[in-house]
Image 1 (tube, rainbow, N blue to C red):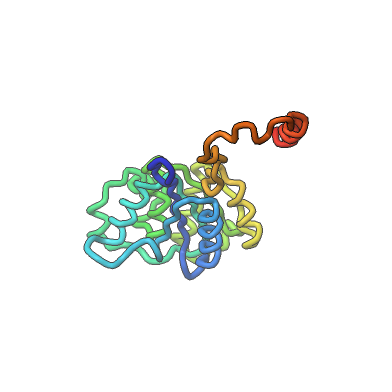
Image 2 (image 1 turned 45 degrees about the vertical axis):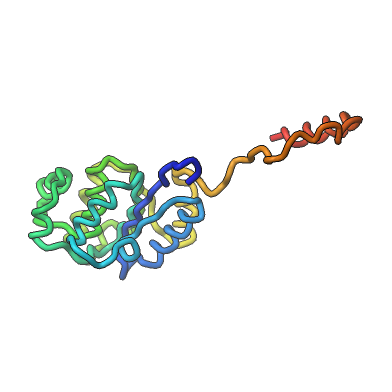
Length: 204
């Protein structure tokens, strides 16, 4: 980044088998805005440490998380992996929802809440159509938190929603002075032309 500025990082969360294509669209749009985008399928390499620990470390570095919440919960971490992670929001979720564990994608949103980063929710349309009872409980818990969210009605509409999110656009560079010496008397006698040019450039 210019001047050594850290990149603005966004994590995009979704169950791959249900909303993988939509997650790809969201990540593509955010990358075109010049943002650093992480998704679980592409961000992590096999190696030491549990997947949940890697998710925790990654989301802790993110400025924002975009969560696409569908009707299935996906796979979940082992009890041993969960025991090694301290997440007060996870404990609160279990207490308030009556659930005994959470899937990886559910963890991604819980970690985002715990880290205090900005997050944006998009739900598949039907609140009560989730065939997975644990995902239905998770969705209902999210609704009970009063968080703002959008509905996913189509991939095109989802892209439009992402474009207007309150996220920076870093792909556009600011104009800079050209690294050339003064042009001296080159434009001598062209004050009228330069005045017209200036008026056109400063118009909104």
